[in-house]
Image (cartoon, rainbow, N blue to C red):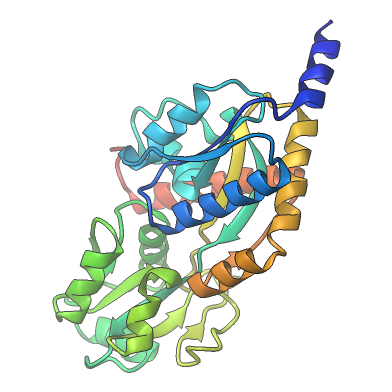
Length: 311
Protein backbone atom coordinates (compact mmCIF):
# COMPACT_ATOMS: atom_id res chain seq x y z
CA UNK A 1 0.00 0.00 0.00
CA UNK A 2 2.81 2.41 0.84
CA UNK A 3 4.43 1.70 -2.50
CA UNK A 4 1.16 2.26 -4.34
CA UNK A 5 0.56 5.55 -2.50
CA UNK A 6 4.07 6.79 -3.35
CA UNK A 7 3.65 5.81 -7.00
CA UNK A 8 0.30 7.60 -7.10
CA UNK A 9 1.80 10.75 -5.55
CA UNK A 10 4.60 10.75 -8.11
CA UNK A 11 2.20 10.25 -10.99
CA UNK A 12 -0.04 13.10 -9.82
CA UNK A 13 2.79 15.54 -9.07
CA UNK A 14 2.51 18.50 -9.18
CA UNK A 15 -1.05 18.50 -7.87
CA UNK A 16 -1.08 21.88 -6.05
CA UNK A 17 0.84 25.18 -6.11
CA UNK A 18 4.62 24.98 -5.93
CA UNK A 19 6.43 27.24 -3.45
CA UNK A 20 9.99 28.45 -3.99
CA UNK A 21 11.22 29.71 -0.62
CA UNK A 22 14.02 32.29 -0.74
CA UNK A 23 15.56 32.90 2.72
CA UNK A 24 16.81 36.34 1.62
CA UNK A 25 15.19 39.71 0.86
CA UNK A 26 13.68 40.47 -2.53
CA UNK A 27 16.04 41.89 -5.14
CA UNK A 28 19.23 40.03 -4.20
CA UNK A 29 21.03 37.35 -6.16
CA UNK A 30 19.28 34.40 -4.46
CA UNK A 31 15.90 36.07 -5.04
CA UNK A 32 16.59 36.72 -8.73
CA UNK A 33 17.71 33.11 -9.21
CA UNK A 34 14.70 31.86 -7.25
CA UNK A 35 12.38 33.74 -9.56
CA UNK A 36 14.13 32.24 -12.57
CA UNK A 37 13.65 28.76 -11.07
CA UNK A 38 9.97 29.55 -10.48
CA UNK A 39 9.65 30.76 -14.07
CA UNK A 40 11.08 27.50 -15.43
CA UNK A 41 8.75 25.42 -13.25
CA UNK A 42 5.76 27.51 -14.25
CA UNK A 43 6.64 27.05 -17.91
CA UNK A 44 7.00 23.27 -17.47
CA UNK A 45 3.82 22.88 -15.42
CA UNK A 46 1.36 25.53 -16.68
CA UNK A 47 -1.63 24.00 -14.86
CA UNK A 48 -0.23 24.82 -11.38
CA UNK A 49 0.82 28.16 -9.96
CA UNK A 50 4.42 28.66 -8.83
CA UNK A 51 5.02 31.32 -6.18
CA UNK A 52 8.20 32.77 -4.71
CA UNK A 53 8.13 33.46 -0.98
CA UNK A 54 10.83 35.59 0.65
CA UNK A 55 11.37 34.66 4.31
CA UNK A 56 14.52 36.61 5.15
CA UNK A 57 16.68 37.26 8.20
CA UNK A 58 18.03 35.13 11.03
CA UNK A 59 21.03 33.71 9.12
CA UNK A 60 18.48 32.07 6.74
CA UNK A 61 17.07 29.90 9.56
CA UNK A 62 13.46 31.27 9.44
CA UNK A 63 13.20 30.62 5.69
CA UNK A 64 14.78 27.20 6.04
CA UNK A 65 12.36 26.18 8.80
CA UNK A 66 9.45 27.49 6.74
CA UNK A 67 10.44 25.09 3.95
CA UNK A 68 10.81 22.19 6.39
CA UNK A 69 7.28 22.67 7.73
CA UNK A 70 5.81 21.54 4.41
CA UNK A 71 5.41 17.88 3.39
CA UNK A 72 8.24 16.09 1.58
CA UNK A 73 6.30 15.88 -1.67
CA UNK A 74 8.20 18.20 -4.04
CA UNK A 75 5.78 21.12 -3.81
CA UNK A 76 8.19 23.25 -1.73
CA UNK A 77 11.70 24.13 -2.88
CA UNK A 78 14.36 26.11 -1.00
CA UNK A 79 17.05 28.29 -2.54
CA UNK A 80 19.88 27.31 -0.21
CA UNK A 81 23.28 28.96 0.19
CA UNK A 82 26.43 27.63 1.84
CA UNK A 83 25.35 29.35 5.04
CA UNK A 84 22.08 27.43 5.02
CA UNK A 85 23.42 23.98 4.17
CA UNK A 86 27.04 23.91 5.34
CA UNK A 87 28.00 26.74 7.70
CA UNK A 88 25.10 27.28 10.12
CA UNK A 89 25.44 23.86 11.77
CA UNK A 90 28.97 24.78 12.90
CA UNK A 91 28.41 28.46 13.68
CA UNK A 92 24.97 28.71 15.32
CA UNK A 93 24.11 27.47 18.79
CA UNK A 94 20.49 26.61 18.05
CA UNK A 95 20.28 25.87 14.35
CA UNK A 96 17.29 23.45 14.66
CA UNK A 97 18.04 21.56 11.44
CA UNK A 98 20.83 19.64 9.71
CA UNK A 99 21.46 20.63 6.10
CA UNK A 100 22.83 17.22 5.08
CA UNK A 101 20.15 15.21 6.89
CA UNK A 102 17.03 17.30 6.35
CA UNK A 103 17.38 18.26 2.67
CA UNK A 104 17.78 16.45 -0.62
CA UNK A 105 19.50 18.50 -3.33
CA UNK A 106 17.84 18.88 -6.70
CA UNK A 107 21.03 20.52 -7.94
CA UNK A 108 23.85 22.92 -7.14
CA UNK A 109 22.51 25.64 -9.43
CA UNK A 110 25.21 28.33 -9.61
CA UNK A 111 28.36 29.56 -7.94
CA UNK A 112 28.91 33.15 -6.81
CA UNK A 113 32.38 34.21 -7.97
CA UNK A 114 34.06 36.57 -5.49
CA UNK A 115 36.66 39.24 -6.03
CA UNK A 116 38.79 41.56 -3.93
CA UNK A 117 38.21 45.21 -4.77
CA UNK A 118 40.01 48.40 -3.74
CA UNK A 119 39.19 52.09 -4.13
CA UNK A 120 39.45 52.97 -7.81
CA UNK A 121 41.28 56.20 -6.94
CA UNK A 122 43.25 54.86 -3.98
CA UNK A 123 46.89 53.92 -3.48
CA UNK A 124 46.57 50.25 -4.49
CA UNK A 125 46.72 49.44 -8.20
CA UNK A 126 47.18 45.67 -7.96
CA UNK A 127 46.83 42.66 -5.67
CA UNK A 128 50.60 42.76 -5.05
CA UNK A 129 50.32 46.39 -3.92
CA UNK A 130 47.77 45.42 -1.30
CA UNK A 131 49.78 42.42 -0.05
CA UNK A 132 52.94 44.55 0.21
CA UNK A 133 51.02 47.13 2.26
CA UNK A 134 49.72 44.41 4.60
CA UNK A 135 53.27 43.15 5.18
CA UNK A 136 54.68 46.67 5.58
CA UNK A 137 51.98 47.80 8.03
CA UNK A 138 50.97 44.83 10.22
CA UNK A 139 47.50 45.25 11.71
CA UNK A 140 46.84 48.52 9.88
CA UNK A 141 45.18 47.38 6.64
CA UNK A 142 41.44 46.64 6.77
CA UNK A 143 39.50 44.33 4.47
CA UNK A 144 35.72 44.13 4.78
CA UNK A 145 33.26 41.29 4.22
CA UNK A 146 29.46 41.21 4.03
CA UNK A 147 28.97 39.18 7.21
CA UNK A 148 30.96 37.58 10.01
CA UNK A 149 31.46 33.84 9.66
CA UNK A 150 30.35 33.61 6.04
CA UNK A 151 32.34 32.10 3.18
CA UNK A 152 34.15 35.39 2.43
CA UNK A 153 35.15 35.85 6.07
CA UNK A 154 36.43 32.28 6.30
CA UNK A 155 38.36 32.63 3.03
CA UNK A 156 40.12 35.78 4.26
CA UNK A 157 40.81 34.27 7.66
CA UNK A 158 42.33 31.16 6.08
CA UNK A 159 44.45 33.24 3.66
CA UNK A 160 45.66 35.42 6.54
CA UNK A 161 46.62 32.40 8.62
CA UNK A 162 48.25 30.39 5.79
CA UNK A 163 50.45 33.31 4.74
CA UNK A 164 51.25 34.78 8.15
CA UNK A 165 49.51 38.06 7.30
CA UNK A 166 48.26 40.56 9.86
CA UNK A 167 45.25 42.64 8.79
CA UNK A 168 41.81 43.45 10.15
CA UNK A 169 38.68 41.72 8.81
CA UNK A 170 35.74 44.11 9.14
CA UNK A 171 32.23 42.58 8.90
CA UNK A 172 29.37 44.67 7.48
CA UNK A 173 25.66 44.05 7.07
CA UNK A 174 25.71 43.46 3.35
CA UNK A 175 27.61 44.75 0.34
CA UNK A 176 26.22 48.31 -0.17
CA UNK A 177 27.47 49.87 3.10
CA UNK A 178 30.85 48.14 2.77
CA UNK A 179 31.35 49.36 -0.81
CA UNK A 180 30.24 52.86 0.22
CA UNK A 181 32.90 52.92 2.94
CA UNK A 182 35.50 51.59 0.49
CA UNK A 183 34.73 54.37 -1.98
CA UNK A 184 34.77 56.84 0.90
CA UNK A 185 38.26 55.74 1.93
CA UNK A 186 37.28 54.27 5.30
CA UNK A 187 38.51 50.74 4.55
CA UNK A 188 41.33 49.49 2.32
CA UNK A 189 39.66 46.63 0.44
CA UNK A 190 36.46 44.62 0.27
CA UNK A 191 35.87 40.95 -0.56
CA UNK A 192 32.59 40.82 -2.45
CA UNK A 193 30.39 38.78 -4.74
CA UNK A 194 31.30 39.87 -8.28
CA UNK A 195 27.72 40.67 -9.23
CA UNK A 196 27.16 42.88 -6.17
CA UNK A 197 29.84 45.43 -7.07
CA UNK A 198 30.16 45.00 -10.83
CA UNK A 199 28.44 48.33 -11.57
CA UNK A 200 30.95 50.14 -9.35
CA UNK A 201 33.84 48.36 -11.10
CA UNK A 202 32.51 49.34 -14.52
CA UNK A 203 32.26 52.97 -13.42
CA UNK A 204 35.83 52.96 -12.07
CA UNK A 205 34.80 53.75 -8.49
CA UNK A 206 36.29 50.44 -7.38
CA UNK A 207 39.12 48.39 -8.88
CA UNK A 208 39.03 44.56 -8.81
CA UNK A 209 42.57 43.32 -8.13
CA UNK A 210 41.98 39.56 -7.88
CA UNK A 211 39.18 37.11 -8.65
CA UNK A 212 38.86 34.09 -6.38
CA UNK A 213 38.77 31.45 -9.09
CA UNK A 214 41.15 29.80 -11.56
CA UNK A 215 39.89 31.61 -14.63
CA UNK A 216 40.23 35.37 -15.29
CA UNK A 217 37.32 37.68 -16.02
CA UNK A 218 37.44 38.93 -19.62
CA UNK A 219 35.97 42.31 -18.70
CA UNK A 220 38.43 42.86 -15.82
CA UNK A 221 41.80 41.40 -16.88
CA UNK A 222 43.67 43.26 -14.11
CA UNK A 223 41.87 41.05 -11.55
CA UNK A 224 44.39 38.21 -11.42
CA UNK A 225 42.91 34.72 -10.86
CA UNK A 226 43.74 32.67 -7.79
CA UNK A 227 44.80 29.02 -7.85
CA UNK A 228 42.27 26.93 -5.95
CA UNK A 229 44.69 23.98 -5.71
CA UNK A 230 47.15 26.11 -3.70
CA UNK A 231 46.21 26.22 0.01
CA UNK A 232 47.99 29.56 0.36
CA UNK A 233 45.83 31.22 -2.29
CA UNK A 234 42.82 33.39 -1.46
CA UNK A 235 39.99 31.04 -2.40
CA UNK A 236 36.24 31.06 -1.87
CA UNK A 237 33.69 28.92 -3.63
CA UNK A 238 30.13 29.94 -2.74
CA UNK A 239 27.19 27.92 -4.04
CA UNK A 240 23.45 28.42 -4.44
CA UNK A 241 21.54 25.14 -4.48
CA UNK A 242 17.95 24.13 -5.08
CA UNK A 243 16.85 21.63 -2.42
CA UNK A 244 13.71 19.89 -1.21
CA UNK A 245 12.86 18.26 2.09
CA UNK A 246 14.45 14.85 2.61
CA UNK A 247 12.01 12.03 1.93
CA UNK A 248 10.79 13.59 -1.30
CA UNK A 249 10.46 10.71 -3.81
CA UNK A 250 13.52 10.40 -6.02
CA UNK A 251 11.34 10.38 -9.14
CA UNK A 252 10.03 13.85 -8.25
CA UNK A 253 13.54 15.15 -7.54
CA UNK A 254 14.60 13.84 -10.94
CA UNK A 255 11.64 15.59 -12.62
CA UNK A 256 12.61 18.88 -10.98
CA UNK A 257 16.21 18.45 -12.09
CA UNK A 258 15.11 17.68 -15.66
CA UNK A 259 13.09 20.92 -15.80
CA UNK A 260 16.01 23.02 -14.52
CA UNK A 261 18.50 21.28 -16.80
CA UNK A 262 16.46 22.51 -19.76
CA UNK A 263 15.81 25.93 -18.19
CA UNK A 264 19.45 26.88 -17.65
CA UNK A 265 20.06 26.59 -21.40
CA UNK A 266 17.38 29.15 -22.23
CA UNK A 267 18.30 32.68 -23.22
CA UNK A 268 16.82 34.51 -20.23
CA UNK A 269 18.72 32.31 -17.77
CA UNK A 270 22.00 32.61 -19.67
CA UNK A 271 21.70 36.41 -19.91
CA UNK A 272 20.90 36.80 -16.22
CA UNK A 273 23.80 34.61 -15.12
CA UNK A 274 26.21 36.49 -17.39
CA UNK A 275 24.93 39.88 -16.22
CA UNK A 276 25.40 38.92 -12.56
CA UNK A 277 28.79 37.30 -13.07
CA UNK A 278 27.60 33.89 -11.85
CA UNK A 279 28.74 30.44 -12.95
CA UNK A 280 26.20 27.75 -13.86
CA UNK A 281 26.90 24.37 -12.25
CA UNK A 282 23.83 22.05 -12.53
CA UNK A 283 25.16 18.97 -10.74
CA UNK A 284 22.73 16.06 -11.00
CA UNK A 285 21.06 15.15 -7.65
CA UNK A 286 23.43 12.38 -6.50
CA UNK A 287 26.56 14.34 -7.37
CA UNK A 288 25.08 17.45 -5.72
CA UNK A 289 24.46 15.53 -2.49
CA UNK A 290 28.01 14.17 -2.37
CA UNK A 291 29.50 17.56 -3.17
CA UNK A 292 27.47 19.41 -0.52
CA UNK A 293 28.37 16.87 2.14
CA UNK A 294 32.04 17.48 1.32
CA UNK A 295 31.45 21.23 1.57
CA UNK A 296 29.96 20.79 5.05
CA UNK A 297 33.18 19.14 6.23
CA UNK A 298 35.37 21.70 4.44
CA UNK A 299 33.61 24.50 6.28
CA UNK A 300 33.84 22.62 9.57
CA UNK A 301 37.64 22.67 9.30
CA UNK A 302 37.73 26.35 8.31
CA UNK A 303 35.48 27.38 11.21
CA UNK A 304 37.43 25.29 13.73
CA UNK A 305 40.70 26.88 12.58
CA UNK A 306 39.18 30.38 12.66
CA UNK A 307 38.44 30.17 16.37
CA UNK A 308 34.98 31.69 15.87
CA UNK A 309 32.62 30.91 18.72
CA UNK A 310 29.09 29.74 18.08
CA UNK A 311 26.68 32.66 17.92
